[in-house]
Image (cartoon, rainbow, N blue to C red; front, side, top):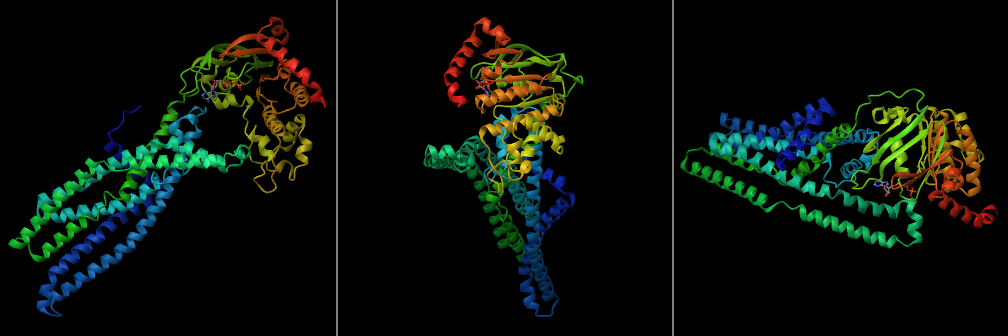
Length: 616
Ligand SMILES: Nc1ncnc2c1ncn2[C@@H]1O[C@H](COP(=O)(O)OP(=O)(O)OP(=O)(O)O)[C@@H](O)[C@H]1O
């Protein structure tokens, strides 16, 4: 990772990053923006000079009388001043509109970059990274209002002409006194950089509170989203949520306001330097005027130049927006590089029919990003292709983590996983995933049509309605779907007109149909994590029988706490502390009389007691 930059360089880098991105949005618009920037600076300066010269020309014109060449000069200067004033107003409006337009497009460009960067990694570890989530908040326009790149462009649009005008006024003052002019020429950039460094510091403070703001927003969303609405009402949590949200919000804002103040030394340094320079310039000008070293007209121009200088607003909100708004830009650009750096190119080709022989976990270790303890350690497991394997173990034993590794959602931190001898770490994950079908415990209930919910298992076959029905039938949901208002095209959400919600068990059957659809599309390995948790015992038994028929010849890995499901598998492994502690068929494990046998007997006895109820 690159060493951290000093705040002033960091601020300059961020502003430069914004400027560099503008031509990528549109070269013609950026060229026009540059032209309007120069004109917005030049026209008021031209008006200033014309006014100064006019003041100087008036006494001579008054003395020479109307129609005299001196009077004509005065009229010409007046006309030039008025023309510059009017043109300045017009150009300024156009300039601001252009800035707003470029700013909006810049946000779109950054949003696209960010989303593309976040979507690119094949795994999901980065989606648990605080920094990535903070940037995503900004992309979803949830960031603090002032940390918006669009505001940086609008800020630059206001600041750049003022800066040019101040530089022009400094050059005018150079004619009076080279040293004074040069001092002003250096003073404004120095003030601007010092202020930007402080804004950068403030921005980072606010930005770094992003995680806490996420938590506050989560509390607010709990109160207003349909998902948690049932519990919130049953537990009477609404008041508590509002209180907590208010408290957290004020706490975050107080903190932000405390840290949004400029450092005293920056304020004193900047204001002090400007006061000294202004006093020195004014005294020198008055002295030159009194001694007659400078004529009345020239003196007027110099004085107006000095006042123009103060149009430059290095310390108002606009200047702050430049610093704060550009802050996330290099971070977004770097994210792409950072996420890509974690990727490694595929160096091995997976044989077409793999896995034909075996999937093998060899001394695999895994710890979640940021966790200090591994959840899987020294795991050795051979899964014979074409057979069914059940994984059992207590809560937190590492079962889901194991299949997440197999699906390539995370990379092992040690050891390797192979398919027919090929290390999956060297294979293109997209290629491996076409061989997989997976139904996770926390499967997604897409608020889309039934068709989409099933076809997502193999989106390229979404148009094949017959295949979709073929995936539905073994799951026993054809009648259910046909009874829905729009059949396969019914949206599965009551939040949409004509849409409907389903029961937990019905949702699970839809998700199973999705997994089956992927199998029909050619997946060879089927991962089912608690596939029947929401089904009643009889439905589960029926469904699993069906599944065994359909998935015969497939490599199936089932995680389940239901031993009626588990016992049907060719082989069962018991996982504990991320390791295999028992391994064998149901009969072998029962004969072993270990953990499996104990858990099976416990559940069988319980079931025997509740069976009459279940069968009623
Ligand atoms: N995304 C995550 N980040 C950090 N730790 C995690 C994450 N997911 C799971 N863990 C931790 O990993 C351990 C194993 O979790 P895992 O989900 O693999 O268990 P499991 O055997 O499937 O449990 P269950 O039977 O309850 O589903 C747990 O201690 C859990 O807290």
